Length: 318
Image (cartoon, rainbow, N blue to C red; front, top):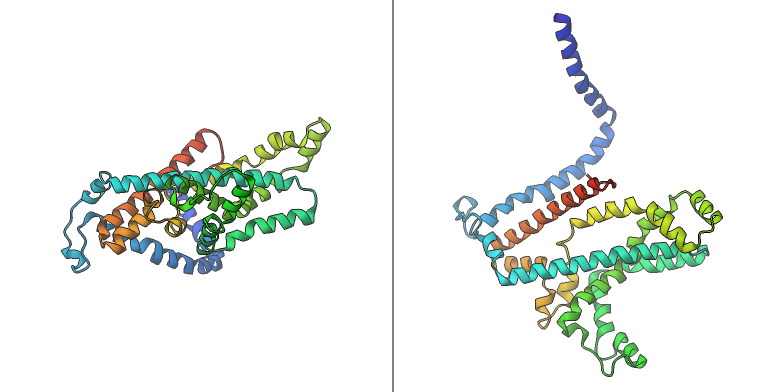
């Protein structure tokens, strides 16, 4: 009996000693990661206490203990406020447009770029395509606004010369065009950069598969359809799961810089809503409630997409 008890205690101590041994062997890595952990705790987790403002009628003039607690009053207001529902519509619509266009164009660009045989030409196109990624949105929106301007905008000049339109169009003053302009701006800026990971995944595909397909008489399009696309499917699924968490992150800079009073009902996003109510109006509680809503929805979508990928037998992120 005593031997059995000693064996159990020894087996219980074994994982602990094994863990301590791993920690001692990796102490250099632990010390290297310590500043990052401290940074995350200070700037990512410590500010979460500010979420309490969403459940108060917060006033900067009062101490935290003197605030008036109101429960879910501000959350209830959000879902009955026509302005917030319109902002939510804009955010979801522009985010989905950016996501779909970003995925489709990046995958197609990677597939087409992979088919280029000339190494110098291929590298030149790839370099030129991802250079806009390093431009700030202030510069990009300036280029977009100049290109779409009525006086001397290259888009209007091109369409006029081709006979597609008879007079210049005020692109940034037509609300129905705003979502498309934002989506096209994101594609132009991030196309080359988003395609890099797909190009890396394509290079990991076994070349013998292409050789066998060529022997069987497959053409280049059939190789892309039956070898290249299935070969990068796992990467596509993982990136899709990661991007699901950004559904309510339609952006801030491009909408704020390109938006104006004419298209305000189509350009405002949740981030602009938070800025407006938090800093301009001073309603910190309502702005915090909107931010919490966005965070909870993003986390829920990540877990939902991960669960769907698991049921379909695909690679998962979590």
